[in-house]
Image (cartoon, helix red, strand yellow):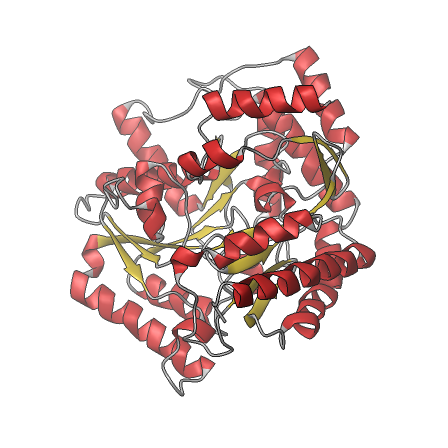
Length: 461
């Protein structure tokens, strides 16, 4: 086993380029090679067990060993392993999944376009909205409004919508017209003495002022994650999304809900837009749509958006956009079965039922920890922000990489988390139990204590 492991590590270092990785550092330390999964746990090539506290990448709802998804994939592979959906071609899995999504999603989101990833989906949204506004005789209505620390993907268009410096630096982004607004996170971004209601009012005024300054006739859409994930697990202030939606409606600006992370139960409701009381014109879905057993994403659009696009395809003769794998039969078959499992096992209800156990358990365990500034989250997604002292402005020097160190220690303790800067993100599979949550908290507690000891030794606290 060690011989095989060493060979894999050497081959990986020699040939693999990893996303979101310091490649020179990777040459020194090598990869963690994950060999198999079972429930909420994964095992590396040396047999070490880890609780997968991030559900992979915010995405594995049903755990890492769901035989029904394997069987669905095999059945479809035997029947029709691949076909496309270009030029009037179709197959049953993509038809049935589009129908299912139209049934599940709120309002009149009745039309579905499949891609392979959330990045491709948000890139497609930009093109759809531009296509629509050109068709409607509004060629200047092209700008997007997004938020600092928002995450919408990494293609040229979706990476431009993303509001994270690491996704822009030396990539020459943003490359499309986009304005980034204040991050809706009260604890970190409120002014001194500003309560949550006043903070929310300030952000909504910022939106109104931006629209007035830039002109509603130039702004096509507002895009946001109902709960921000990769920016650090940030829950919006009360009333924020209702206010954003109202302002956008008044100014004929589309509302795009990026629920790539939030969708299918993560926040304790089927879709987070339902939890936060707003109806999007476009809803972007991925990750938990197939529990990431297969690459799959979907864009759901309203009747009005669809009709404007469809009318233009009649004029031009086509919608000149799509991917070889759009609506892939194996991916959509797996997605359809995955949604059936989520419904039959009551995983959305499980997330709602365990929300207090998870959220209050983390707060009770860590709110008073010397290294923790804030514990935040909703449903089964949470962030633990590490600070040098227990005040809002006392962030660590990013160069010290305290969060990355904590994530490494957590892995040594058998818990995979994700360091978003110095916020430790947790997002377990939706099949998690109370006992699993207790063990996640125990392992994270050991990691935080060891990280505190390291910080003291390094003179950081």
